[in-house]
Length: 102
Image 1 (cartoon, rainbow, N blue to C red):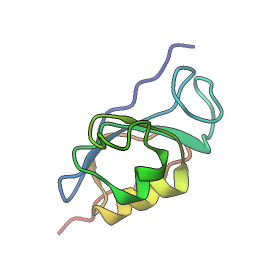
Image 2 (tube, rainbow, N blue to C red; image 1 turned 90 degrees about the vertical axis):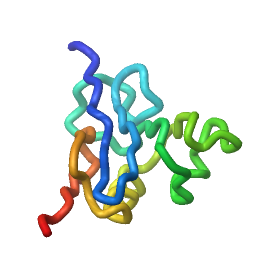
Image 3 (cartoon, helix red, strand yellow; image 1 turned 60 degrees about the vertical axis):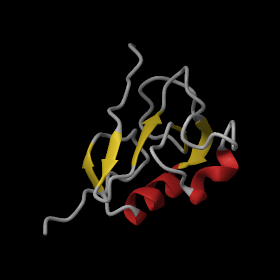
């Protein structure tokens, strides 16, 4: 199976991040095409997000690092905190909370 690369998540308030899960990512399970991931890799958010900081590979560069083995519940909460997704996609296990129409 070919490694899936998920499109960058864009939230309603302008927050953006990459959320990945595949055999080359810091995720669990560390395989391609899992039905559900429990831990995922977050990368390169456009602003510092306090809920992710304990997972930062380089906490001194919060917008220029990856965040490994982040529980999917935290990623879902980050998306909700920032108003929901207006674009992008997330791996199975992360709730794809869409921004509500106003």
